[in-house]
Length: 309
Length: 295
Image 1 (cartoon, rainbow over the protein chains, first blue to last red):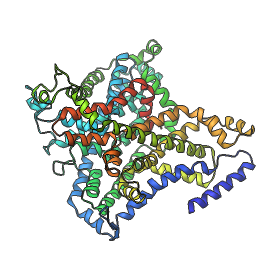
Image 2 (tube, rainbow over the protein chains, first blue to last red):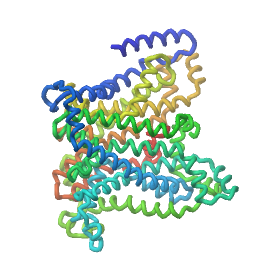
Image 3 (tube, helix red, strand yellow):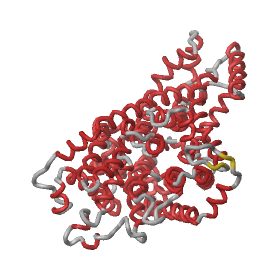
Image 4 (cartoon, each protein chain N blue to C red):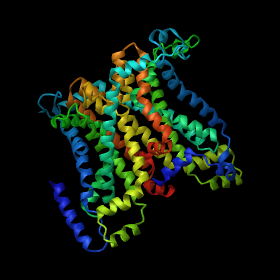
């Protein structure tokens, strides 16, 4: 209602402007996109908050039950565990992915032709669906017919996905396998935009290769690092399908991170109220992380990036 | 956006000219080289394993060295997958991908034009809404989306996948397209307007040709995401007739259970279309992959 009223007002205003000097397109051009986004994104955001105060099994009637779902979610040790698992995966996958992708990005940005060829191969994992990646690694890591089954590779003969001490590291490794290529690509692009003259100047000043990396490359990549790190950290909240197919959250609750916990609570345990509460937590955590990371980058980030481009 | 496209171009073709002029670009990097080759091995091993295993027969798969190719390759696994409804899942994936990308691209294109060239409270409100959409992990809203889809009687239809996917694709598409359109000189708009062109005509005759590279990039980026999406198909469809490829891999895994080579053949088959695309249009695909964070 308000939207259509505003629309009418906006279009009237732009009609007035049209008769003036430079008329722009009316708000109607944005209307289809906004309408679609409203129904399938804005409404659900409001809905997830509302549904967290109800009880619903996914089929029957939705009943208003106040804070019941929230009490259930917040007192459930599995929720706390899911938050811990999410934090662990977030931190570990950042610690693993950041240095590797920075190193590979700088390396593939070099002019040598073989490096470009390597880069072409590096990017293949980006084409695979998470389900495909998970299935491939599940087979590869199987103690009976995976790498561990080879004579002489007995050290690899572990129940990688069934051992709760190992499984988190396996998950982090598979995440890195799938997403390091993306971040390599980001860093490669960032390095290529660094003006050559900066290196030449550093060389004249007598800076060695390593020194050049720390005094030229790294500071010049500041905004690239922030972009890539934001993606790595916030992305950890969306590793649903990979872990769902790879481990199903197990063994036990060892890899049941927040989005997976939300799905299993809602669509397997049929507790949509609690799942909605978990969804709200997910949104709040995601927004907080995004804000904190943007702050770290300073306010002039967007402007400087455009300047660099 | 321009930067990403050109960037990807240089990435694809290391400049031969740049080689002589810029010796500093030709530096040796021992640490990088070492990790580069190690990473190559890490990338290739699972892919190699999947491909060679997919042509082993079931008995041979359990008996032979997992990392050695078989002497008698068989395509029976592929046949099994193709007979298990693969072509239907493939077709569903194509329909959902096109059905999502085309309208979301069109709507985002029109909205970006309004945001960049238009004025008024409604337009700045729309801009704010899409910017907010970028920051929120929309996957967190699967419960209300499921509710909306069931209430619209769309559960277990391809529409159930297309509509929310198209909506979710909008914020990033608008961001990239609007950034790109800001680079079109305003003199071009004004001269068309002086010639009496309507906004609609300007959109198609000026903005469309000028933003074509960005449209391709955004389209590929969204298509990749939709093609590989798993969560929406999992919660919003149920029947075999509506199954899409990524979900079918998961169900194949259950159906074939210990016939691992057949499951791996399905993995290969589901990846082939994108691999072919990668070989044909690598530059566009790479720029599409990086579209999400160019600015």
